[in-house]
Length: 521
Image 1: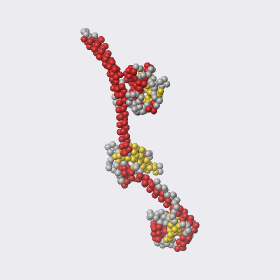
Image 2: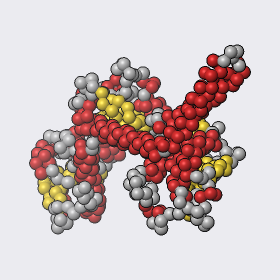
Image 3: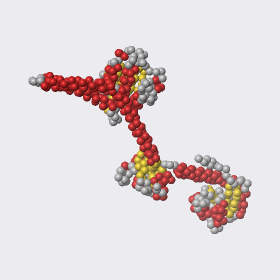
Image 4: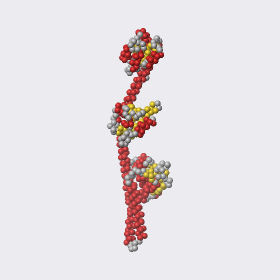
């Protein structure tokens, strides 16, 4: 920004015009003011004085009143009526010392009145005083012009549209950005009704009632209104998204209008939409990765599940053969036949339960948070994992808190996390001599907001750098592992607002635990 001019700037040789039809008076004034750094000019009548003032623009005029032709009053009036000369300082010198004459002189625009005969010291003092005042006025005028230019430059360079509104809702001012954004020329905006021209409209395009607009609230209640993501209208009747504010303009403690500052957020919304699309695509890829992880777990457990399902199917086949033989006897033993059919039903439900758990686990989630029983969810996970447990010759023990709260989670995703930790724990214990102690799954109320689920193993433990690498994608210590299991689990728990972490057990092995939020009651 340019530097403002100092208030009292150094001045050039100042011009003073001496106007009197009496040569003696002029001579005395010349002698009095000579040698004081002023350029002295003289005029012997009113007409001559007006010509000189228009030509050289003196800083001050010492003006006699009683002159032939145009008197001093008329000269002063003409100077003050002309914008080009209204800033010239006028001091009357006259033998008319009646109060009414002095008042008349001041009313025509003079700043002072010196009665004749005058004293040299008085003339010098008053001239110097009024010249100082004149310099200050000129400096202030320059500063005001400079500030106005700076303000105009700022308003022109602003990207936000700024519109001034009077108390009746009429536009009184619009900066260039307001015209550029709306397509209206400044002259078209001035005097127009802001409610009908700019303010947001109803869904069908009709003008919204004044009482429902932020501008109306600002004008009637004297409060600032900030509105995000609304719609303004252009000259061509197309709309554009805006953020805007309405600030009351106060005068004497009351709202006398408002200032609307608005910003076209079309580009901002375009970026937001692009970001949202990217986030949606990222979420879709995360969902696919989670689904792949669940399918991978089921693939690894496939042989165990096949064996698990084969048992009830074999039993169903055997009971069916028995029932057929019973039906060939005469008479038919209905009680034995009924017992066989009931056993077929039990085994069918057993196989169905196994298949239902698998289907529930591998399905793609609908990202629906549900209020579920924490202990029941853990029990369902253990039922899925029991196949692996029997295959590995170990047991899974449950330590479920009785006062555990319901949790609000995506049950499929939380089952995926718990199953992954259980299977990792069993794999860590598979070749260990203490695997007969089994794996423990524990639930506990952590605090008012979270429940903790922990999986405790007595396996081979964790590497020294596990803290830095364990939850990193594609890091694995397994020969055939993908390294996405714990990374996916970490992402799932973070999405739920919880924490996934581990500790090394003093007796060996590790405890992996995670927290999930308690459902609000």
